[in-house]
Picture (tube, one colour):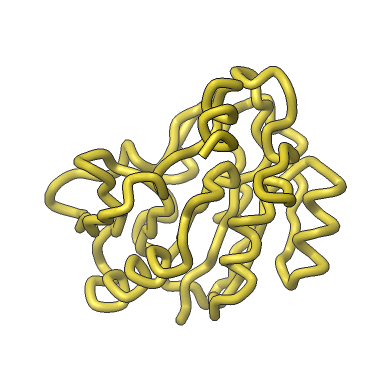
Length: 190
C-alpha cells in the first residue's frame, strides 16, 4: 500500500498534567499501542513525530522513522506539517494517528485502509457512534492544505460531505483517547 502512516506524539499533555503517553496500560506505555499497530502493517512510510527520546528509541527499534518536533508548543498542526513534509514522495495518502488511543484495533485500521484503497480520492475516517474519529486517511491532493493549518487545528476541519467517506466502527471504546486524569482512571478501571 502506498499510504504514509504518521503518528503524532509530541503534545504537551496539558490537561493531564503529566506525560500521558508514558502512563502504563496493561503493563506498557500508552504510546506503544499505536506504534505496535503501525509497525506490523505495510505502509510506504512509517513516521512518528515526537520530541521524546524514549518514544523515539522504541519507535526506531520497531522500524519507524522518528522526526523531532522542536516546535511542539505551536500545536498539533506543527506535527501534521512535519509528518507530511517528511513523507515518502511515493505516497498516495496520509494516515494520521494520535498516540493516546490504546484501544484502537488493527482490524479497524485495516478497514479504513481497505476503504481508502477503493476510494483513494476521498478522505476516509472512522465514525464511532456518530462521532468523527482517528485515524483518518487523506489523499495526496490535500497535501498543500495541511501547510495552511494553524495552532491546534487538525485535519478534521478539511472534511466535508462531498470529499469524504465514513467507516462505521461498532466498538466505540476504540475512539477513547486519554486527555485527563479521569480518562486514565476510566481506562485502567475496566
